[in-house]
Structure formats: structure tokens, C-alpha cells
Image (cartoon, rainbow, N blue to C red; front, top):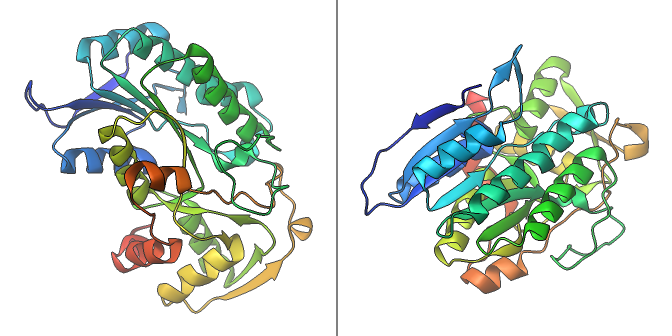
Length: 305
């Protein structure tokens, strides 16, 4: 089974190189763009397809590819992110969200000059807290997706890799691929009226800002666990209403409780992330989610979705 390897920029021996797994997905594209903007050589690896369904990378093929490339960093943007579907396919979700980081961790542990970046989620928390979660808060995921992402974190911690950075992030949105906002807008086009949950709070996170934050931490050689999201908090109802307002989409948004709109996977009622550790490490404060959303909308990305 062959991996799809794309060399986006060959670079030179003096230019750092990176391998991005999942370079075609929403986060992966943002990472590739930011790396290239900073002068890195970039290679992407995509999961193979079997009967139109992405399968897990084989350890042998991953080891061969990454060892040949000897990159300065491996960034894993691959994830099983279908939260509701994970409830019915826990083994598949675990293979991608925990098994793949384990493979990468063992490879990078044998490459002393290579950093590994793994992305996790605010859904490792149960929402019982009502102030932003910090890195030392005890996880207690409510759904399979959160459990598999936490397992990925724990696997890497057990491997004790010196150069490993784990970033927990909030609700992702960004250009070029289907995301939370594009799905909401599609529903709005179809129905004219959107019924959205008003009692579940989270941290909207712009993938372009997350890519910048990743590079800021990498360039400072930070390792360990960090939270990153855009500043502030929102409900899905608030995020939707603001998106429609900025995009001049005259559609009605009706707020309902999460009990009135149950889903297969339970969501934590509160999963807002504190980024104080990130700010202390970099001296940078994430901009508000409203500012990031404005850039997303006014740059025309909303019209492309």
C-alpha cells in the first residue's frame, strides 16, 4: 500500500523541511500555507483509500517515508473528526486518533532532530467547569471522539518523546474545505430558518491562526501540552448568527436547548480553552474569534464553501 507523497517545495539543505499528514484537509492546508510562507520545504502524506474510505497508514511505509525525508518537523493534521459517526465506529476512530500518533511517536523518537506536532481537542473535557480549561485540568471526555483523542495524547506522553508538541484546539473553521460554518450555511440555504443550540459553549478556532500559533511554538522549540483557540467564547447559536450577519445572509436563527436537539455523541456543555500558557510562551495573545471570523468572511472564503 503506497502513501501519496507530494513534494510542494524542494528547498535546499539550508531550508528546514516538514512533513504534513493530512495536507489536503482544512487544518492541513492552513499548515502547508503557513510553512511555505515561512520558507520551509513541505511534503504531504495522505491516508490511502480503500473502497473510497481512507485507511490507516502502515507503520512500515510511514517509517520508510519519514526516515528518508529526515524532516525538521512532522505535523499530524490527520484525524477521525466525524464526531457522531465515531459512536458507531469506535475502533476506526481509535485507529486514526490514537494508533496513528503512536506510530509517529515511535518514528520520531528515533530521529533526534525531528519534532512531532499532534492536534487534540477541547472535547477531552466534560464541561462541568465554568471557567476556561487549562492544561492541568483533568480530562473526562463524554464521547468516543474525545476518548480517542485523549488516548492519542496519553500514548505520546507514555512514549516520552523529547520533541513532541500537543495542541488542544476548539471548534475549527477555515477556508477551502467543508467545516462547521459551511455546513451551517448549507442548512440555512436549504431551510431558510436555522434551529441552533444556545446552551453549549466552546472556543471557535480559525485554522489560519492555529497554523501561525503552531509555527510560533515550533520556532521557540516548545514541547508538551498547549491549548490554542481564538479569544472569547461562543455558542453554536451565536457563532451562526454572527456568521450570517457578517456575510449579509438574511436568515433567521432560532435558539433551542441541547436537550431539544440531541445528537448521537454528547457534547460538553462548556469546552472553552484558556490560552494563557501559549501567551506566556510566545508573548502573543490570540485575536478574538469575531475578528478571525471577519477575516474569514470578508476574504471571500464563505462564498467558496
